[in-house]
Image (tube, rainbow, N blue to C red):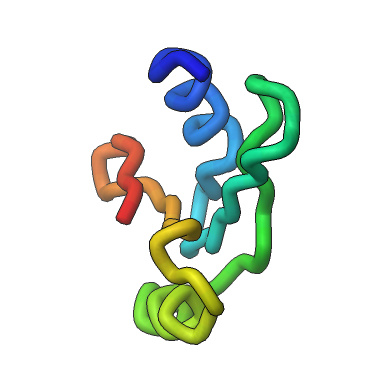
Length: 73
């Protein structure tokens, strides 16, 4: 999958408010590899949910910054 498609998927899944825990489906087609696990109001809750997963490196948290920029951690 190209980085450009991945970036578009991240932007599409980034919530206006709060934090989304996102998973990666390596067996899906190249334009639908990211999927929403759960939405959180607090970053710490999203981070804790990520750490509790079997393979935390296969998940990340998406959110918007104060200026509307996209962040992925």
